[in-house]
Every structure is written in C-alpha cells, then in structure tokens.
Length: 271
View 1 (cartoon, rainbow, N blue to C red):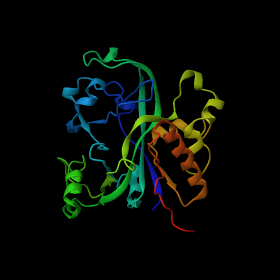
View 2 (spheres, rainbow, N blue to C red):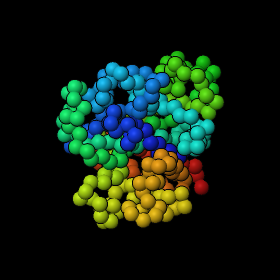
View 3 (cartoon, rainbow, N blue to C red):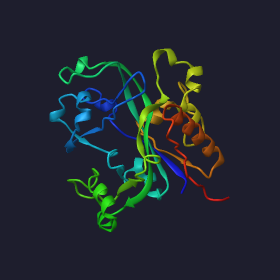
View 4 (cartoon, one colour):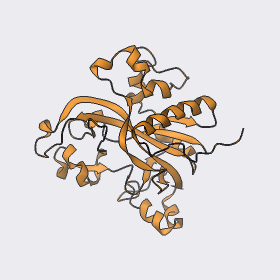
C-alpha cells in the first residue's frame, strides 16, 4: 500500500498529425486518447481535436467517466503495475498542445494549435478493485461490474494473460480527471535554460532509476527518460525522500485544483 504509479497516457508525438490533447491559456484542457484501429469511436468532446474523427477509432483508457484504467502488465513498460494493491494511486501524465482557440472541426490546420507542447499531470485514480482475470468481473458488485466491462481491455477484445483493469474509488476526492492541467515541464523557447529547468516539477519530483536528477541537456537526459521508454515512476510513500517528492507534487496539483488532495487518506505502513 502507499505507492503512487506515474503512468503516461493519451495522444502523443506519434499521433500529432491526427490527434492532439489541447491545453488552453487558463490550464483547462481536453484529454484525447490514443488511436486504435480496433477500438471504439472517439467521443464527441474529442472530435474538435481529432482529424476526421468519424474515420478514427481510439483506445479510450483511462475511462474518466467510469473511473477505470487497464493495461497489459506482461509488457515491460507496465510490469510494475502487477504490484498495485487497493489503496495505491495511479497518477496520469501526458502531452498537451497549447491551443488559443477551438477547432471548428473542418480544418485541422486552423484549429488553434500553436505548435508548442509540454508534459502535464492530468488526473488520478485511487485503486479500489483490481480485475486480474476476466472471470473476476463476475465477483464484483453490480455497479462495479458495469464499470469494468466498459473498460477498453474488456470491451470487444480478447482478454490477455497480462491484462489488469483497475477500478478507482468513485468519490471524486480520490479519483478524477483534473479540471486544470499541472505542468511537469513545458519546454517553451524562453524556458530552455538551466534555471527554468530546475524550477520545473519534473526536475523537483522525478529521478532516474539510479537516483540521479534528470538533466536538461546532459545525462540522464529528461527527454529520453520520459519519451523513449515511456517511463513509469513509482513512489513508495513509506520512503521519506520519495514522500517528500510526492508532497511537492501534491502541492503543485492543489495550486491549480484546490479541492483535490492527492495524498488524502493515503496512510502508510508504520515503521
């Protein structure tokens, strides 16, 4: 218990010509999920930010309406999620593109995107239930069963041996898509300096696997750590140093989402 898993989700660089999650000047944003030819139709709220949305399909995960998240934990990048237990926290981050207006749905190139993008925290799920086998769904209470079967890992696809579906606490004080995005690192031209980098949440809160600070231009380079491996970080709240870093993250989230406390009721094991 008392671990936080930082998970990369949503449309990213490889989807930029077709789908982008926009962030506006007041830090409000629209989450746009990744492309998936075998998935479901993009929901209407994402259509303005998807090129030819009627012809695209998506892997809609996390499901922010039902508050679930699924992953294939037999894959290396998601293997750490095998260790998740009820009470742990899934904290989601992704790429957002600066947008000065709304797409009219007809002209992708005139949809308000400025070309600048950054990395932001987007939302969190406090884990209440975990489905490890498709048969586990039958043992859920009816409301949770209805949530689970709608997750992309259960809907219209064959269950894989490594699949997990995590059901979040339904109380929005524990699980929700944030109202405002939380800046991890926004590499605008005027911010590409060492001093600005060291002010970033990414620098303050995250470390390389060997414990070193991530670097703007040296090694371990932040961009490789974030994008190439789609790295998952895990914070153990029983570890004092990791707890200190999560407190920094908690305060950054509350600065723009005042009613959300990431660590609310996150009790740690006694030492």
